[in-house]
Image (tube, rainbow, N blue to C red):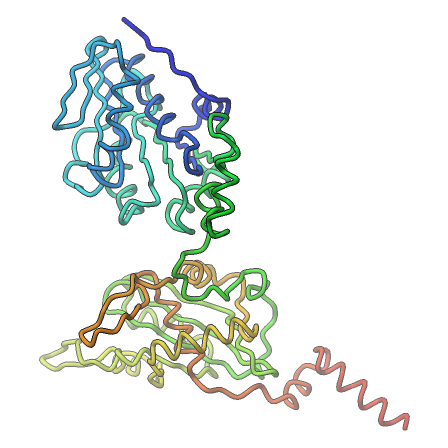
Length: 438
């Protein structure tokens, strides 16, 4: 059997020889990621019999454009049965089949398991430009991941990043070396076959953030991020004791099915909002949610105004979610729901550091880092208008309701009375002693 020779640069060789089951390559343009991925599939198909190996791109057309000609070149001289319509290559000597797929045709991604019983743990799947695949998290977990189970096969994810999305999540799993995962950040400059002057020229002509993403593999924020003012360094703090005298506000984004979300906050003596707890659960009954929320008595509740729609049928009568919450002990005011006004107000609070978020509110932090605009669309009136992308935004909605509510700061007198050892209490004590000395 003819075995072709493959020439890799040093970084490619390092990754190819790494034994990790799941490999994530965050690479800049022209680093050679697709070349490496196809070589890895070819080597598996040439060495092990009856392996079923997939290369999956964002679309079937893109897979053909990116990989088909290159695959033919890599297997030049090998006895292969080529199927031009199916984009598949059957290596006759081993009976292994390499197939090119597009994630845009989900039905084509279902079927028998990938890999071979002759090589448990071997690479069987490459997902190219993973960050560009529509609903990539579901494609991986619900469609592709189960197909690796038969032979405990491995997978390689390669992409130039597009913000902190599902690709970033997989990359971070690799950085933490979770469960057989490993990841690499690979700037274009690491490819010795790319002229460094070309990279420098691109740096001069491209926006800085775009260059970092495309050539350095940097996970930049979404282009349409709604709250670019939010920063973990400035707005996220370690949890600390919450004084009882602080006026407390809670907000609920309820759901009949799906995710019910909630935030608990207090208003400090400067009028700043401090979010100290969150609720984020799927498919919970109202009675279960209220049992969690009623732990604190002195808290003012706000609720999504859409909860007043009468959509719950019971004994022939229609009730609203608002009614249900009231029945189980949560009497809430309906929140203001001026979408753009609320977003602008939250942005102002972040910009002036008037919001603090306890570190334990992980779901809120996760949403804030991803909450972004949809592509602008033309309205019936001919206006170009962007809307928030309505997915994974439950706690962002809660925050918007919370900030839109007008609130008063804590009573400083009560604060000092309840906690004389607080910073304010100590200042007040010093003032009293200074007055006595006078």
